[in-house]
Image 1 (tube, rainbow, N blue to C red):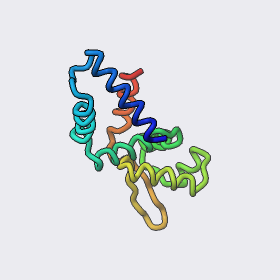
Image 2 (image 1 turned 180 degrees about the horizontal axis):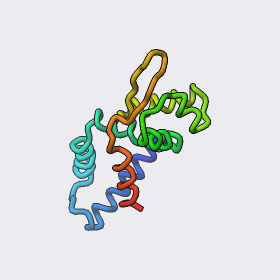
Image 3 (image 1 turned 90 degrees about the horizontal axis):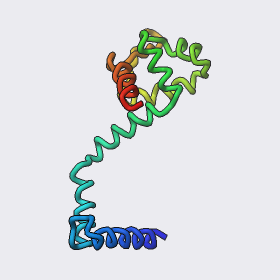
Image 4 (image 1 turned 180 degrees about the vertical axis):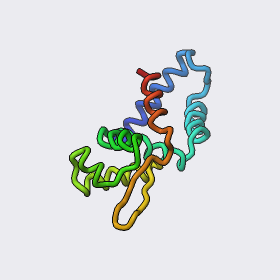
Length: 133
């Protein structure tokens, strides 16, 4: 199956090169250049961080948590009540936000309080969404 897909891709690339639309002359050389290009412009560690960030932002509940924390620091129990979530669900979402580098926590006795790691994150998100809408 994978070989069949690769053959189709190779056929398409070959047709593109033969069409004179593409500046390349040799299909295999051009395919190699394309593969090298992605390696030049990407870094695995950066991609992992970006993936975690976008995963964190791709959920309505996590966005609501960020909006709450944009108002002020909150205890996990306050977030639970505000969003009508269970403790495990709230902790799960907060962990994803923490791993993405969006929120931080501090302990005060047995209480855990969360806040935005960067005070400007919600302003950035709102402005970005406006620009692409």
